[in-house]
Length: 234
Image (cartoon, rainbow, N blue to C red; front, side, top):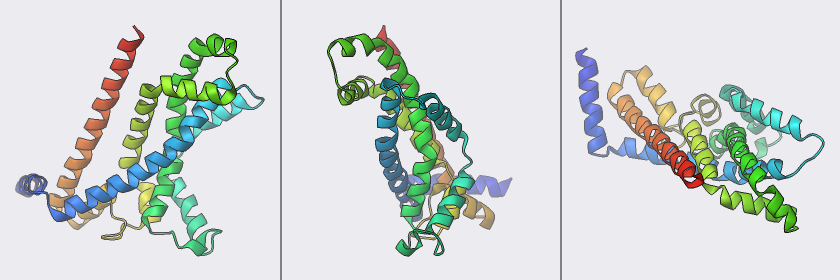
């Protein structure tokens, strides 16, 4: 019990004094996750809008697959990315394995279905409201997509925040493709796992505090955006 209390005290002090290792790992986590979030959003949001306004033969099957991929095990994603980026893989020549780039690729694959699915649910409802108006104005396909993307920006931001929350807490795929290399690919989740195994509870707890703070901030932001969006509709 005393070891836990000492660890908590040391962890609190590391957070307050902005310990160098803590800051480095946190900034790397944010850099990797925000990069993945930007790329994933550029893929997922237009896809969600396209699936909302366009009717085609395999649309329902595409939506079903997209929703199913939300539950894709991260470790499996890490394994697939590892195989593709390994020396014997098709992209092994680029030497991306065990780099932040590999971690970004894995996170993008994990969160694209999540962001696209959440965004599609919101944009589908928005499209039902705008359908007749945009059709009567003879809006082109791209104009329809841009219109609902702009008017649904709050819902899209909520989807993006959900993707950020999923990515920042990911450990399985990141560990497989990143390797948890000190000063290179070590991020919050992998560092917590490593320091806990080493018995360094102070650093592990301080990293945990930061991760929990991020999770709380994201959830508060999602709650606020959802509330303001509902108030705006009324």
